[in-house]
Length: 345
Image 1 (tube, rainbow, N blue to C red):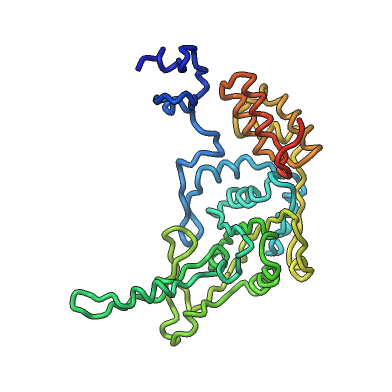
Image 2 (image 1 turned 180 degrees about the horizontal axis):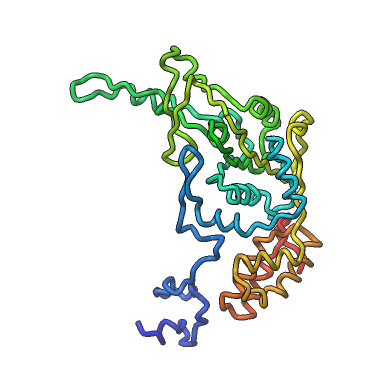
């Protein structure tokens, strides 16, 4: 197919080269013209660490960590949590960088990949500590070797530590654990977490039921392919994890839980910080086209919740070569309140 044909729609009129998908029912190789994704949507490098918490961090997490810009208040409060070995309860509007803070800490202090526990209404502390696959063990209990003898599979093969359990593994350096959207959890979840926060240890019941000489087992960790030796059926931290607990303030937490955390409320970034974020993510050249969009973004923020990643999406489209009238329409679609289905603009 010729270049002229590729550039025509069903009417024979030129097609905007910005359009990858044209919607004209023709087939073509337009996907080959798709440029590189925005840096924060580049999934070409997913790498996780080993059981010790060391290892490479995937590209998108590394970028979020390197471009995060904390305020002086954020830096001071994080340091207080580090000194006190206490969890940090982080609140703020969507998109202010609550979860990015965990990535920034792990990146700067070279603590390896961040362990993530995304909380839902069904989340439990027990599952965040570990899971025991009783069904899998039962299914494999009848496996026979070539001589017809039953194969004995160690029980540790059926135990996988969760993100919280992996974070509590002993080590010379603490691991970073992101407990995301904790306010979405069950009402009892904060109280259930208190014991772990205070004691820094937990037991694996399935191992502790075994005779003493059988309690040392190799189990899986939350890191893909990671394994670790658990002594005596008990996981006991030697360096309390750096625990970042985020909340969108959908409900209050009990005083006993709040007493054991340091609290930090992150303010939305100002104009200068937004410009710096755009430059970090898209390069200084993008600032010329971003100026008006930042002003529009700040005006909208006075009326509802909009997040910095929405701003980045709008700026990226503005630098992608889209016609101005398309940019205007897409800007309205990209910069909408997170609290409603839409609003007058």
